[in-house]
Length: 299
Image 1 (tube, one colour):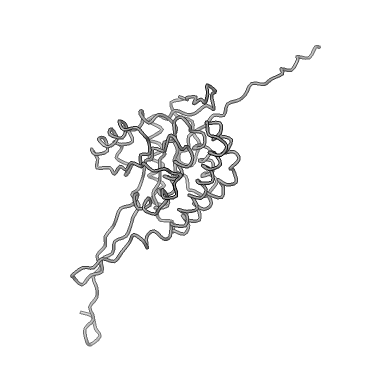
Image 2: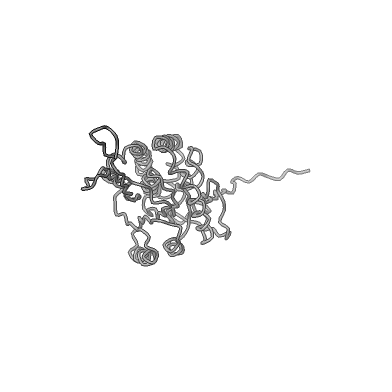
């Protein structure tokens, strides 16, 4: 029996990049995908998140947030440091994907190095920002008056379109350092490194649901995110004034905090503890001072 001749070339299998929700990697419930391309060449099959996917990610984030906030600051620091370690261990893969998305070799290496350093930077701040931003307030009555930072809760982040890895890391790190959980919409045109970063999170002791990563279209999802009552704050890092105005209008209906970021993430000045405080609320507590009589007994 004659053998079938082997083909001189094989069909390239494009990777399917799934979303990251609740510590798992589901496909979109709608079954929709899109194919971002660079110079006319498709770089992968990417899930196009639906409104249902958004709701699922918010449910996962809300469920995970209280337990994450209760972790000690030192433990959150250890986990952020571990994310940086794991990212460094997979730097070659990230470099390859960033170059596939159109970055030069030097740009890819710089993006990865800065991302690792940023994670280590915020790991160091986890157990220190309270000392910087909290205080004992002077009051006229016989009370102690303390102001401390508490996490917002669930933060939805529109990650940078232009900086697919560093832009995402620069938002996620301060959000979770403060004890929040995050739902992140990755860069639509360059989403590959965001999902690979999710694989890093999944193997870095980050509890499922603390960080959730969606891929898809911001124009389709922004209204649902801004109007969702279980999202406490929105971080917006896109150069789209129309989208930003819409988010502000929709978020005002439920008094949701929104913040726009216009930072150059490559600039060292863009990393600072104030980004942690941006995702916190100030809680003030009054405590009576027990007065002691001259006889030594309280009254």
